[in-house]
Length: 230
Picture (cartoon, rainbow, N blue to C red):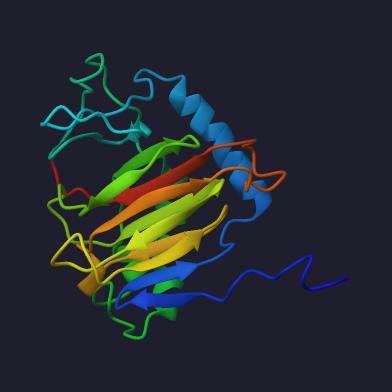
């Protein structure tokens, strides 16, 4: 069979110090299973919602939270900006998945200790996940993930349609930045010097979700974090 018709996933690479892209990290069976979990989360006590920023701008992605409910600039146990219900617990299987992600991304990073001293996979204990659903028109502006009290790495998983992911620097929303394509099954981990880098999604690429991933259209992005909140 032609390699042009059936291209192999790109090799893992370090986009910036501590920022690692691992294409095809989840297989199709894993992706489909997670999409099934997402549908159960969406039917749970707190429905997906498009967050409203303090200035009144409503985000175009819809979010379901696990462990902690993210509101702009803070975390709460109850979704006081939706219906006041407590969000679902952070699942144990996701802790294990996050630890594996950090360990494998760390093996790609140029600095083996970029995610912390000792064994970063055992030290990484995420307690919150933001699960974002992007439709064809959804975007995410350049922002920093800085509402956490911890500087542990962020683990990001993509399922469904591909997107353009813009990964920038820690000082400004503008250049320099790197644009790369995140496809279904891709893992992206950023920590260490890149933990507070600006990043965003300027475009989703409709019609690119692979058969068997569990989604016919749209994109699910899961970001696992260590909040540091008690």
